[in-house]
Image 1 (tube, rainbow, N blue to C red):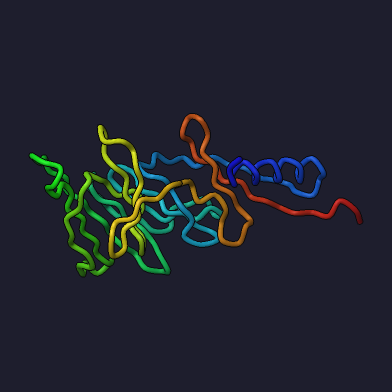
Image 2: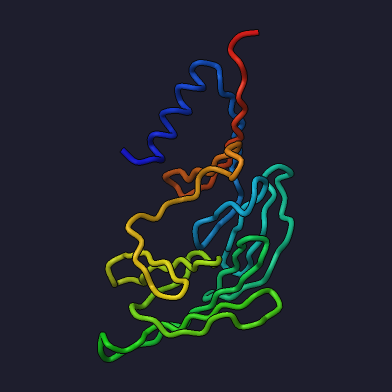
Length: 186
């Protein structure tokens, strides 16, 4: 049983015992990569032509940035980053197939490296999260100074203060659930 399933079962029992109340709303977004928590009140969203910081309390876009198809904006430790990648056709498995670039929000280049296998960015933070491109077997990697395969990659479901939860349904819609603990007795 995964950690996500255990959390879901725990929340179910807390709701049944009237210890936990929930308020839930759907995010009207079309992300091209998974969304994630920036802080207790906001998430990072990358859509086709834009990226934005979304305040889940006020339910509004706080900041917005333009992007191209091969770019992802990301937040980490109050810093904004832009990751870009360029994939090329190769003649042999020994050749580098992806060029990865990372800049800060002032446009200063922080990283320019060639990688193999062919990947695309799915999270642009201190550690960049990459995923292989079809038809290659799907794998997920983390990159800081070197490329490391991640055995399990999942949605960052709980906010840092554990008061909100991100879920994604079978139709790939994102939902925010506010968790409100109450005492079952006076």
